[in-house]
Length: 226
Ligand code: SAH
Image (cartoon, rainbow, N blue to C red; front, side):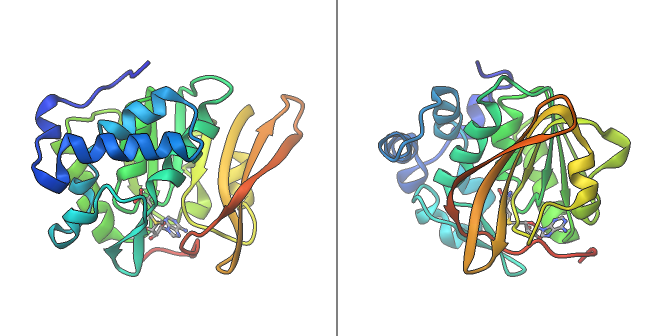
């Protein structure tokens, strides 16, 4: 199931930005334990080179995080795939909130798999660039907002799923309050040197089941807007 495939024109590329480079990345994701074929197919069909500076295009389909300016990074493809599959494991969420738009890559991956994506970024310039990419790729199911994501997006709550792509010491209360009673949240939590990817699932009675999904390395979740 791929509810919003990108237009074929989005996938034009040559050499290191070609379909062959994306196919190699998809093979690698599978080898490294990603199981959800929908997620693998979406990463295979998402032009990650559109989300980074031209000087880095030759590295777009390496399985590494890359700089996007302002001291921030586009996440490693494996981590994007793992977090996305963890969000979708119990069913396709209708409304997803992302905190930390960054390049917009994770939002574009999600927007091909779920009906509605809401994404919040604190650095205005990064958000401006991400919005341009959403438009260029013809995705109309992403709404974005320049704000402190620690506040969530109260007017649009509740969300069936929430993903944080920056790491704080804990999940901000306001964000957790915006998760539906049976929703799923995936986030890196901890200090820069010691972070764990966690998943929380609401049991419908106001409690959460928490699991640890493995060690990760994300930029910090900061307060206020940039
Ligand atoms: N999902 C992004 C990853 C970007 S890195 C991608 O696919 O490219 C994390 C992003 O979180 C950075 O852009 C950073 O500015 C942003 N961020 C950090 N703290 C934030 C906060 N409190 N609210 C909103 N965005 C935040």
